[in-house]
Every structure is written in C-alpha cells, then in structure tokens.
Amino acid sequence: MLSAFANALRTPDLRRKILFTLMILAVFRLGSTIPTPNVNIVNVDSCRAQATSGDASGLYSMIQLFSGGALLQMAIFALGIMPYITASIILQLLTVVIPRLEALKKEGASGTQKITQYTRYLTLVLAVLQSTAYVTLAVNGQLFQGCSLDLVYDKSIFPIITMILTMTAGTGVIMWLGELITDRGVGNGMSVMIFTQIAAQFPASLWAIKESHEGAQGWFYFIIVLIIGLAVMAGVIFMEQAQRRIPVQYAKRMVGRRLLGGSTTYIPMKVNQAGVIPVIFASSMLYLPILYAQFQPGTTDNPNPVSTWISTYLTTGNIVYEAIFFVLIIAFAYFYVSITFDPVEVSDNMKKYGGFIPGVRAGKPTERYLAHVLSRLTAPGSLYLAIIALIPAIAFVALGTANKFPFGGTSILIIVGVGLDTVKQIQSQLQQRNYEGFLR
Image 1 (spheres, rainbow, N blue to C red):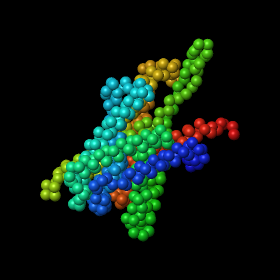
Image 2: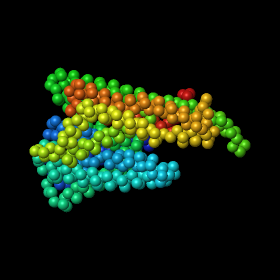
Image 3: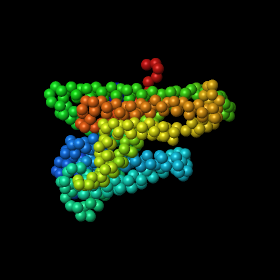
Image 4: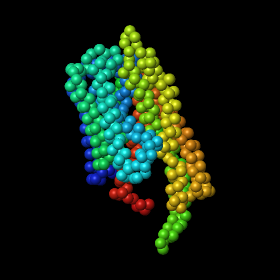
C-alpha cells in the first residue's frame, strides 16, 4: 500500500489528484470548526465538555460519530454528511418499490444522473429539517442535557433563520465538495469525507484513554486498546478481501465471419457483499430514538420516561443497545444484499450472451444456484459485520474506557472499507499508466 502511494506521488497526474483531494478535505475540516453566526462559542465549549464527560457521554459520542465533532460545536458544517447518506438510503429503498425510479436505474448514465439529482433535492430538504431541529434545541437549551448556559446570543427570529440557512448551505457545500473529489480527485468523495470525519476524532480519543489513567497504567491501557484496534483492522481487511468465485463458461458463437466466445471467467461474490451499508443503516436507525430523547427530555420534576429509558439503555456499551445493534445489522445485511444483487437479472444476462455455470443448466436452475450461494455467503458476512461492530465495544467496556473511546467496530469498518477502496482505485490508475507484464 505504501509503495502504491509512493508511486502515485511520482506520477504527475495522480499527484495532482491526491493534492487536490487533500486540499478539499482541509477545507472540509476547516468548515467543521468555524461556528455558525449567533453562536456563543465559550458557552458551547463549556456545555460540550460537561456533556461528553458526564453520565450521558455515550449518547453524545454516538451523535458525534458521523459529524467529526462539528455538530456539538454548532459549526457551519454541523450536519456533516448525514443528510446525504439518509437521502441516498431513502432513494435506494424507493427504487425497489417505485417503478419509475427502477426504470431510471436501468437507463444507464442518464437515469443515474436523474436519481442523483433527486438525491440532492432530498438532501437539502432533510438538511432544512435537521438544521431547524438542532437550532431549536440550541435556542431552547435542550442540546446539552444538564447545561443551562445560553448557547446563542440572540433568540429573535432573524438570527435563528440565519443559523438554519447557514447550516443548510453548509450541507450543500459538503455535497459539492464530495462531488469535486469524485470527479477530480481520488476515491469516492462522500466515502472519503465520512472517513475524514471519523478519523479526525481518533488521535484525541486515543490520547484521552491514556489521560484517563495515571502513570504507567494509562500507557498500559493505551497500548492494549491500540493492539485491539490493529487486530480488528487486520481481521476486517482479511474478510473484506474474501470472495467466492463462481466459474462462468461462454460458448463459442459466430458473429459475421468471426468465431467469438469460448472464454472462461468468474462471478466474484464477496463474503461481505453488503459492505458497510448495513452498519450505517443500523447506526442511523438507532440514531432516531436518540434524537427523540434530545427533543423530548421532559423536565426535572416530570421527566419523560421514554427519553429516560433511551438515555439509560440506548447508549454505546449498554447490553440492550448492543443486542439491538447486532440484530439490526444482520437484518439490514440480508435486506441490502437482496436489493443490490438480483440472481434473476444475472442469470438472464448470462443466458443472453451465451454464458453458463459448468454443471448448472441455464435459466431457473442458474437462478436457484446463485440465490443459494448468495444466502450461504450472506450468513457469515452478516455475522462478521455484527461481531466486528460489537467486539471493540465489549473490549473497551471491559477495560473501562468506553466513555473515553467512542469509536467501535462501526468506525473501524468504515475506515478500513473506504481505505481499501481508495487504494484499489489508486492501484488501478497506476496500472493504466505504468503496466507491468509477467516478464520484467
């Protein structure tokens, strides 16, 4: 991997793309630290320090996971990439149930461009709703539980609308930056920005583990957590590369006066066919009750029992939260694989071009065979995702560092997955420019 980056930096075109990507990410991180107008930075910092070190630290660490710390700073990029992720998930689900969207998906590039346009519009709508919700919480003093300081200078209507429009515009800028990375940089723009948001919190969180214990004990816990993280990353890399290769033979056929076909290839079916999407789905679903608890906390004399239960049990490290998270990941893995890999479509395409699986008849038998293999692969793939998502949390709870280290398997899966995808793209572009054959 390091040699790939070194070779990429020596290639002028790739070097420009990498530097352009780094510049965009620097702008993205800068926007995650610039506060929204009308925000009292001193009071926000005080309330954030109090909230992240108190009993509800697990709740706020979950909120910060996909915002890179920008949300609790009330920054102009406070909403982060979450509105776009939510909009993309909604459009993917609607593609299955709305015939018009399904037809657009099959149209190729023009249809995909139209769906992307719908995703942008939906992202802005969600950004308006979410920014209104967060600004309302900040104005009413409900963004940080147990903190009575004023988070804004002026509570009149015009400054509040300005804050909402600023956060919404920040989401639009994030979408634009992500598309710039995809078009002119390296990797998928949105994935790289998620990677940046999560990785930005790693150094401070790791050092907080060392600071939470005195002397040699702090270094001991720091090294143990680092070893656990590296071991989990190694396991994730191994599983992400694992695949089942189904051989496909193409029969010879006459095209004009030429004899074509007769080649042998394979269908690469990954063990983790769904990628990190089920984990993001599950995290987003568990994020909804947390938002409800923020909106309806109740009062000191009359607390909301539902919000109290959510704040007590639906936090990282709690056994109820981890059990629900485990089940949701497995369910979403099966669901997402079923809508992204269609055995009927694959079988029809193979039959159209004269392809067949050795020992399996074309048509319905091929469909049943592919569906059987897919279900057999999804079982270990979904269990792998769920276990990886839980092992770090269990280990950190055992070490007593769960509140100080808010990142578990979710962030590791996303970071490793995005990192592998980016490295593969760099290597493919290097091979196009400097192809090495078998003989050197």
